[in-house]
Each structure stands twice: as structure tokens, then as C-alpha cells.
Length: 328
Image (cartoon, rainbow, N blue to C red; front, side, top):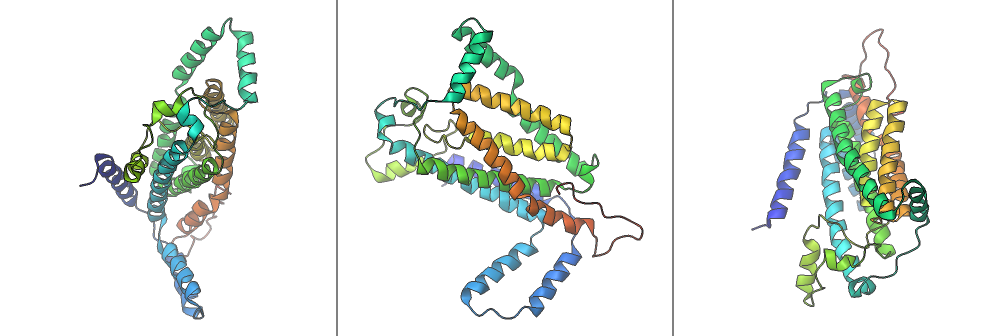
């Protein structure tokens, strides 16, 4: 019998995948015809490696956007489970963190924020209270999730000019691919270099003492931790999620003023996160920049899926103009 958390995870993944599969897309006859034509005229591979590569390429080319979105969702789940285990590995092998509270690194960004807020408020206690009240009032995380949901609804119902050329499955595939890539980069980063946490007694608050039995030691790492870790700081996981959501729905809105307002709000949330000592300022900075760059890098994945949708059965109506993709 599977643990309850694993059963819930599998159920949520299945519901999400079948939900995407229910979205009907126009079959792209031109793409399938071109693929079959290339396969017929392609010479036989001379090695087993090329055969496997061609098989993967053919299999991927046969998937439509909703199926690719399901693959992207699976990639996010795998990346998060791997990250969760390695967070435990890094924390349980960092002896200074287990023994007590190691000296944190100097964070110049936080120092500047503290001096700036001190000029506005009378005391540090009042400053911390006002900052937390401001963060609770803005509730940036829920605002981003709501905006992303609204973007998906607009694409599904074809509301707005940009929604006419993009699909829900295409945006979901683009967003999940970006998030999965960002989490992989984050995992590799905090495994390579261990950064001491700024939170006092962080290990004792998040993890039990490392078990001596290796099986128990592994099982602790396999349990999902919703509270995060202690030394998984570079890059910020919080920044990768919020930046992925921000990139997704601002690309659908395609409005400069709206985008400036959204990213200003996100930058304010990152500043509060750094001020409160939950993350180093460089963690938030790199998390945002790397995720935005990955969004641009994975843009061709969505564009390739949308091109076939703009041309039905390989033909366009007479006198009609094929508009360029808004992602270009």
C-alpha cells in the first residue's frame, strides 16, 4: 500500500493530465504529412545510437500540445521529488547546521533594505511589523495564482486578441517546462555549494536528528517537506514559481503597463523576503533572472505547437493573412 502523500500526488497528477487531455485541438495534418514524408525518404541509420535518437524524435513529433503539456507536468513532479530528497541530503550532511546556528553570509542587499526602512519607521520592531502587515495585505502569491488561472480561462474561451493564436495547453506546456528547468538548475546549484541559513536553529525546526540506520535516513528524505529546507538557498524556489507564473500571464496579457505593475509587485515581494532574512537577496535575484531567461529559451516549444494550429489541413483561406505569433 502506498503512503497517503504518494496516493494524493498520483491522483492530482492524473486529474491534471486528464483535464489537459479533454481540451480539443485541431489536428495538424500538414505537420503529420511532413513528418511521414521525411521518415520515408530518410536513409537507414548506421548505428544503434542514431536509431534510438530517431525513435525519440519521431515519438515526440507525434505528440500534440496537450500531450506535451502532460509530459511537462510530469517533469515538474519528478524535479520536485528529486529536489525534496536532495534538500534532506544537503541539510543532513552539513554538520555546522546540525550542531547549531552557523554564521550567515553578509547580505549587502538586506543591509541596504534595513537602512532604508529605518529612515522611514522609528524602530526596528515597528518596521518588521509594518513590513509583515504589508506583505499580508498584498498577498502576492495568491494574486499570481489567480492571474495565471484567469489567463488560462481567457485562452480556453478565446477572449482577447492574443488568445486567438494561443491555447491553454500551449501555455501550460511552456510554463511547466520553464518551471521544471528552473527547479533542476536550483537543485544543482544548492547541491554544489552549501550556503548557511540565516534562520537561527533552522535544522532543528525542519528536520529530525539524522538516523543512524541508512534505510531510515533515506525514508526521511522521501517524505515531502512543505516547509522547505535550510540550505537550499541558491536559487530561491519561491522566486522560480512566482517568476514562472508572472512570465506566463503577462505574456498572455501583452500589455506593457500591466507587466510593469506585476513585476514591480513581484520585486517588492522579493525585497520583503530578503528583508525578513528568509532568503539572501542574491537568491531572489538569481531565481527571477534565471527563470525569465529559461522562459525565453523555452519559447520555441510553444511556438512550434502553435504554427500547426494556424494552418488547418495545410491550407489557408483565400485572402486571409496569417498573423505572426505573439510569442515572437
